[in-house]
Image 1 (tube, rainbow over the protein chains, first blue to last red):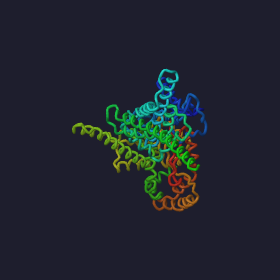
Image 2: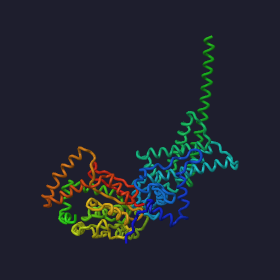
Image 3: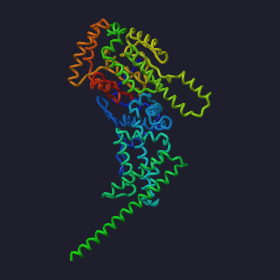
Image 4: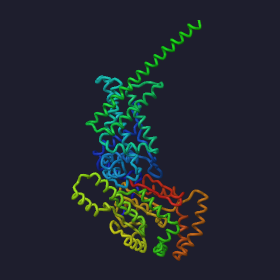
Length: 285
Length: 261
């Protein structure tokens, strides 16, 4: 007996069934994915996961009602589920296929994504950035409530970068592969924008209010620190990555002295110029 | 339609090669690459009479399985020889990784040719041959991971019924793939293509297969077939999501893909 599949509202069959079957189980996951699509409450938010082909809703049932999720949300869930298979399969379509399987979908669902796993990696980076952002916001709230001390800039930067890099630890073995995929010309716009928004975020929570040229230099410096530390972490085999954290500490300290030196040079320069002007005036008289 | 293919069955492969100058093999390979199946996939190939897609699928899955096996063995560098031998034996019996193809066709003759080909080329496991109508498939709901129909959908009288059946038998998350002749938008190329289709192909049909009328029908049915966007809309109407198409050779052939989500 064949049943007619013509629901008036064209809901995603799989997701509807899954949500009904395991509502409590999936609740925390879907609520976190909901948050991605709400507008950011305060300050900068890292850019949402850059989408590939946008879902096309033609014909009947183009609207999404609250009970059913969109294609994007389902893709989100598949990628999140796929992350746990990355240590074993790498950042590949196989990991995505395994992730789809755990959600009760066919392995063919991995065909929705590119076969080199780009979307999986970009999804992961975007998730990490969101986590970092939430962490920094929480810390800021504590400081505002007076429950914690405001950290000096170098310590703040160090802790933020360390927290962000620690999120890579479970996937560290396959991370070099991910880095190379992120550098593919096709992915560079997305990966670059994720990186810059993360750095922006860190500086924002560090209390950076500058509107002059130093805005660019600060971001460039921090990006440099982050990237070099990440590369060091790839080859680090010390227990608990202590070599990496020491490297990070040194780089941040360097950056601080450099900025002090720069401002010193500037004020010295100004003094020199004033002296010269005075001399010129004296000579002319 | 039945009689066309009854006449055509035996010479089908030869005609394909001569008509498309062998490019149809490339098209089918591209389809397989797009599918990118992993071991354990259950494929339904509809109107796949002589088994071209099915054989390619088996080859692909076998090579993927091999690669995975190699990677596994690389990780187990410190196993003893005995253990390596045992795991190798076990995986040899599982060379397809539980993947399976079901070839379904409305025409008994085409299936017969397909079975003979399989025997001849040495494909034994993972294949099934079923007689069936694309508008009313003899399978249960939610069974298959991938549904393909290569150069078959233009021969179906009610395309919308075939699409609905495809939707029914696919598992949630399953993929629909359709490889078919389509519309060429480039005007110069379209003139050349028309010339080739109407002048050369029926002549080849007469010379190679002794059948002018069938190939005349073929060329006309290609012209009658809905263009890319229209087929995409029909697939969406059947309930598929993320429907997309890829033109091969400027639109002479197009691969449409949709997911049951």
